Each structure stands twice: as structure tokens, then as C-alpha cells.
Amino acid sequence: MSPESTPGQASAQRMVEIPAGEIVLRDEGTKTNWKVEVRAFRLASYPVTRELYRAVRGEAPASPAGPRTPVTDVSWKEAVRFCNLLSQRTGLDSCYSPGDDPDGQDVVCDWGAGGYRLPSEAEWEYACRAGTSGVRYGELDEIAWYRENSGGEVHDVATKAPNAWGLYDMIGNVWEWCWDLYDPGVYGPYRVFRGGSGHDLPRGCRASCRRKSHPTFHIDDLGFRLARSL
Image 1 (cartoon, rainbow, N blue to C red):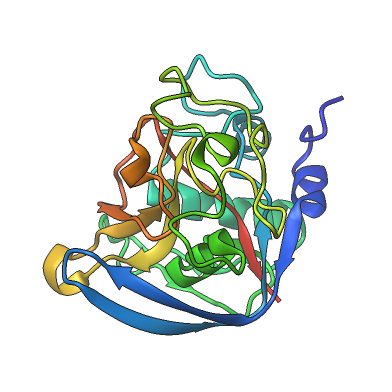
Image 2 (tube, rainbow, N blue to C red; image 1 turned 90 degrees about the vertical axis):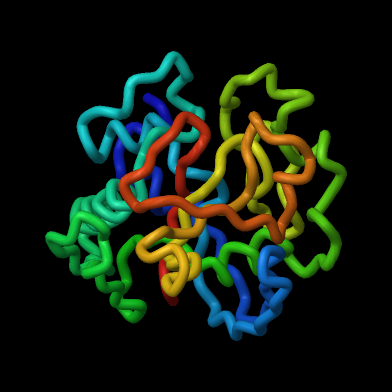
């Protein structure tokens, strides 16, 4: 039986406790920086796999990729629904109170709930860096699947070196949805995703690189990773 054959097995075994700290985020378009305090939290050591997604939802988006690859073609709204469903399946309080807005702007997150959720953008970058301050937490070929070594395919999780906190695939393989709105004054409901993918050049595979899209957007190199509050 696979180690991710049930939601409970998968979710209980692979969450890393991230210590509290702070992170300076930067938007390269506006050339602005802002400091964010990050509380201690838990983050999955790798993105949600097709195997786990299927175990929770009953099916996964069609793809030739194997069961241990990150699930892709999942929108932000679908990722939020997955988090709530996994929380319910494992006896935890749901973090999200979803609404009916097609843009997802009425989704509310209870950060004090014990269930599964998406990381905030600050949590994501803070965990990605794992105490480092460079462009990325290691040599790109050693830590990431990107355009020059991926063969244009999504690869199994945890097949490249982790960062210092034991997190795999934070850079490359697939982009990962975060909770945050990108810039609501300019882009409305667009949500942030981070990390770069196997289709990206090195510039897209940096700890600070920010992308965004509509919460219903889905594509074959965009997935997500689970977080939990402490």
C-alpha cells in the first residue's frame, strides 16, 4: 500500500514545524519592500501529490504524470476546497468559510483553526529561504527541476535536495498557490503563486519571484502545498 493511500496517513507524516521569524518581501514591479512577522506554523515538506489529491477528492485532473508528482491544473478556489475537505476527512476544524463569489473574494480564512490551508505569501518565502538570504537556498540544478533539466515534464516530489528545514521542491517543479491577493488595487481578485516550475528559466526559479492570476485559473505547472497554524 502506498504511503499516501489515505488522507490521514499522508497529512500526518509530512508536516514540518517552521519557527517564528520575519521576512522582507519585495515586489520587483513597484520596487517596494515590506517586512512581515511570521508566527510559527507547519508546512508540508512537498506539494500535494496527484495520489493524495485523488484520495481526498476521488479524482485528479487528467494528466500523464505519475501519482507521486505534484497535482497541477488546480485553481486557487479548488485548492481552498481541497484544504477544507482534507480537514474534514481528518477530524480537524476547517480554515475556510467559502462563499459564492466567482472571484473568491468572499472566502474567509480562520487563521486560528487547526485544519489545513494554503500558506500566506510571507510564510511561503520565509520557509523557502530557511534562514538563507541569497537568490535561492542552493545550487539550482541540485534543488530544482527547471527548464534546463526537467525535459518539460513534472517530476516526482522530493527527488531533488531539500532546504535546511527539510522542505522539498520549494523552487522549481511546479508553482504553488498562496493565500494572498497580489495587489487588489490594481489586479482585483488575483492571487499570488510562488516558486517557479519545470518550464521556467532560472529567473523564474528564485525565492523572491512573485506571479499572480485569477483564482479560477489553472494550468499544467501550477499546484499547491499544505500549511497548518500552530
